[in-house]
Image 1 (cartoon, helix red, strand yellow):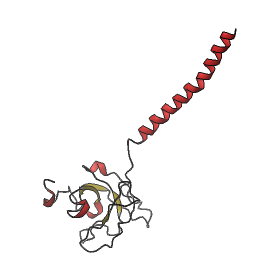
Image 2 (cartoon, one colour; image 1 turned 30 degrees about the vertical axis):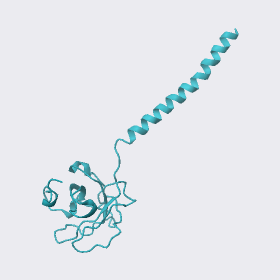
Image 3 (cartoon, rainbow, N blue to C red; image 1 turned 90 degrees about the vertical axis):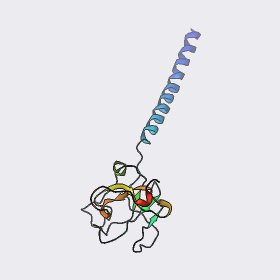
Image 4 (cartoon, rainbow, N blue to C red; image 1 turned 90 degrees about the horizontal axis):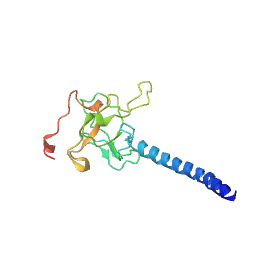
Length: 155
């Protein structure tokens, strides 16, 4: 009889252990699957920490409010379609589909995010971001596909 009690106790004490191991395994699987599609917060408002000078591409490569640490403010020139668009978080990209991001809520007059979405292209040919393809607000771009500047050919 004591042998039956001992095996019964072993069985009942191993059940919580199995449940705990199963729970831990599920937790690991859930955390790994949630990191598969990282939110780069493209389009989130940020601060370039610079004064916007004419013909200057102000940017901040240490923007803490941006997961990829890149904050851009495009040149404001006569070709722009929405000069009231604010600086925004960006990320490196290889094609337009890498640039899904936050856009303006047209019902909110205080929202100054990008209106037309984002395209992948070279932002500047100078400085730390020279010739890197980044997600750029389409509000400041001409219609049509973006071309790589000649300064960046072969880089």
